[in-house]
Image (cartoon, rainbow, N blue to C red; front, side):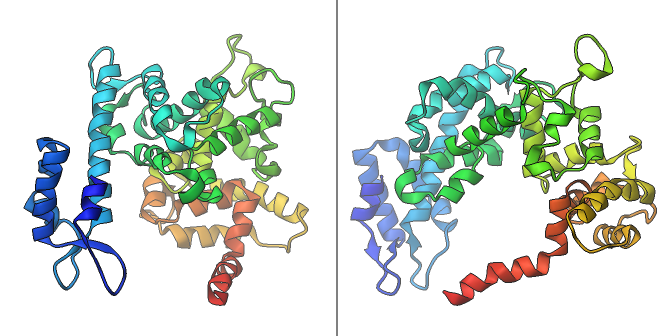
Length: 365
């Protein structure tokens, strides 16, 4: 189809973009129907043409249209593939079914083709976990296929179709959870933290995450809320397994999402009441303050920070902050960072300088 589009389009003299008007669009529809098959005609409806931005001459660019077709085809194929893997036909995928779906995709994703065979099983485990973190909020162990198809996760996974050498930067690869670079990073991180090499992480081991910038009280609360007790039932046997570690990393790397913030709010809610009081915020920030001073920073007043957080959130009830307040204020991720991570508070405290540094290279260019 891409060849058909390019052979029958016109070049915009001003921008060099490849475009087509409605007459070209109808002609290309006939060519594609002859060369590819009648099924592709459904993409060439008048309503589809109207979806795209038009220039002064009523032309649309061929690239956005082609990407729309490819995305639609990919989603249709994904729905078929997932439905075939849904063993009990209930419209949900269990972890092993999702892993099987991802394993089947690997040969078709340009950036994953060279994956070492020994790493495939671990990769599928890491990749599948993101779908369950975002598409199985109640942790029932199954993800709705419809929700998966509409999720940003699937879109992020499909981005790996791009040829990495030409089209994707190292930064983009590192930021995409589904990239080989990212999966290896997660694995290496877990192995580096697991000092006693028993396959799980103790509180002491997890404290070394992110160079030890997370507070002790936050690590304690993570274990209280998100780590199951050991089989013997003793308090000292509780350690974080790899699945729980993946949840932990996903929450910290997606603090601004409802799913990430829900995970973190459970840790911040010290008394399990469903809201934070000024006393809770004072207790949480006290640990951040201690690390802040140990780092050689200037003295600050905890009460001032607490008041600043209240100003940022503007809770519906002035005496308490709920999860909904954090989601509504659009700064929930920043507030959570300020309360659990000295680096997060430093970033907030230096936000104006950081913004200036980001803008300076652009000005030079």
